[in-house]
Image (tube, rainbow, N blue to C red; front, side, top):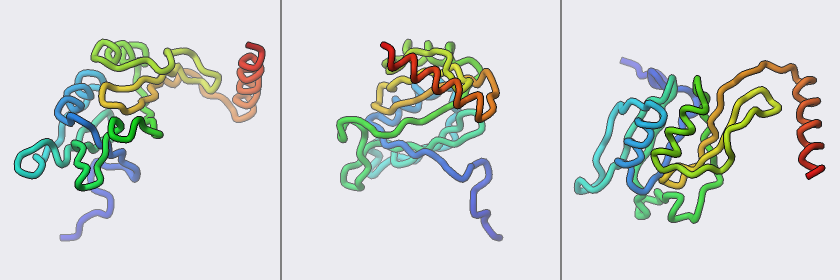
Length: 158
């Protein structure tokens, strides 16, 4: 039997998060994003979670607890994260409010953006940043450039 180079159900890119309290993160992602838990492997000596896979929409998200001895560091250990995970959802306002109610912090309130998405950013209780959007309008590259120029000019006037 020959294995597929990309396992069934996976896409070419798959985010893998290191978190402090992976079990709590799994419950957060279930309640906010409707994640389905695919599998969970306990850590050494039954401590923590060494590997878990969740499915959000049509995509897989991997995560594990922080294990500094294996160079798995959470955002708390690193004093932040330079990465944001972007997720498209049918109703950004509903998902954003669920996230805030579950303990996330607003980084940028949901608003209509010049590129055609209704979009907001938050930090989950585990230190990871998420940009959440619902696509509302398809724009040509020329229309997007015009909209961006107008948005940036408006920013500069403040």
